[in-house]
Amino acid sequence: MDAFCRLSGLDPLWDWNRTWYTANPDLTQCFQNTVLVWVPCIYLWLLAPFYCLHLYCHDSGRIRMSCLCIAKMMLGFLLASFGFVEFFYILLERSQEIQQHMVFLLSPIIRSMTVILALCIIQLERIRGCRSSVFLFLFWVLAVVCSLVPLRAKIQLAMDEGIASDIVRYLAFFSYFTIQLAQLFLCCFADKAPEGKTVLEKNPCPVKDASFLSKILFWWFTGLVVKGYRTPLAAEDLWTLREEDTSRKIISAVEEDWTDECAELQKQEKALASGVALGKRLPDQAQLLRKLQKEQSSGFFLLRTLARKFGLYFLTGTLCIVFHDAFMFAIPQVLR
Image (tube, rainbow, N blue to C red; front, side):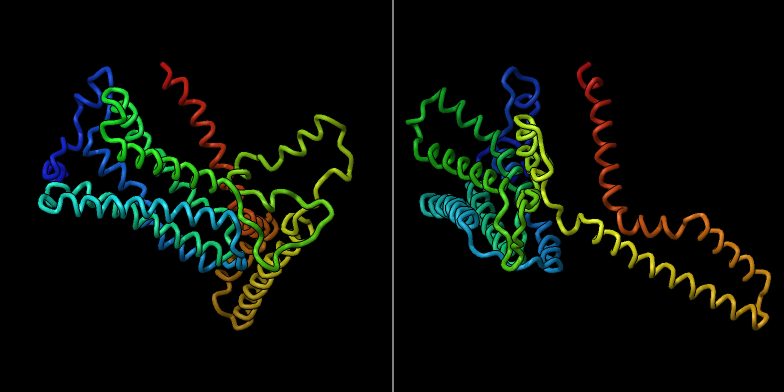
């Protein structure tokens, strides 16, 4: 990587004297134009096949083109055009010294192709009924975070030398960063419901239309809290339960799994009974039958049914608690 950067006339990939042993730390130009550009791209290209497979296996219905989706597509095309314009500008202006500008030539084209991939994923999500994308939100978060270091460097350079020295490049970078922020902002909202999925209810629960960020931070619950703070809540103020949260839906799903467990147990008991009738391995089969009866009496099969149905939810909650406690214990150690 150092040789690749030297070919373009840049400093090495990492310099401790510039990054750590200085009063004004900064990353090298090589690091800013390679690693910080490529990290979000690598994330998207590596995980996109698995995410597309997930979307293919989970179809929630088709979403019509909305203002939110159109805005995302327009901003995405603008971001891709920035990279292509920069690529062709360097290709035409530096055609005689093209080998000495490979870093500046590859980074914009990689960035633009990655944005085009993100636009394809946006359309695939719309076709498969995904209203809020965690995958693309993390991509835009990575892109914005990785752009903060070049943003600081550009601002500091503009303050030292003045923006008039290279006003076109400054405006292009600041415009690109602003559009990235806009894409990240749009990813915080959920798209409209798929066709045929809209159900008219008297007081629907807002979690249906909430984005994943709103669900994580419980923003969808804020309206009821504010209303309860201003006036006492009544029964008609409460939201209607979602279909998947009703006891009818939950109990019916558990009963189906429990029926399958009981049917499997009965098959095993019949097989053991037929073996005993034929006089085959009476002691071992009798012990196995007693073991199965003991597991059934202790609630083993019921526990397995509940774990199969609700294990993922409890596991997710447990991991969140573990991470929270780990950070709470780590904060005093870091502040020492």
